[in-house]
Image (tube, rainbow, N blue to C red):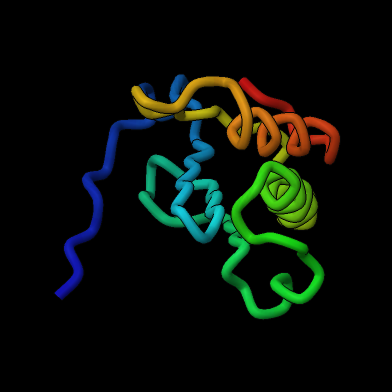
Length: 114
């Protein structure tokens, strides 16, 4: 049984930034997804673990792979007409290296960061 997320009153949801970018890095792969916060659903995602992307990448875990994932995610967001996202960084994530590569390639794809 799936429990639906709580419904917030409209006066609160109009001030929230609805789309949030979350990134996860493992020793093998790079994952990035955009979550629609009010409904708690994944709006779009990209990963270096996808079978279609693996042959085109030299490595699935370095900064170049993170940049490619950001570019692909940006293109998928533009197709779904999501113009802006908020970046959510965990405590250990700093704007450096792979995180910077994902965010910069999202900007280059035309997604506005709030």
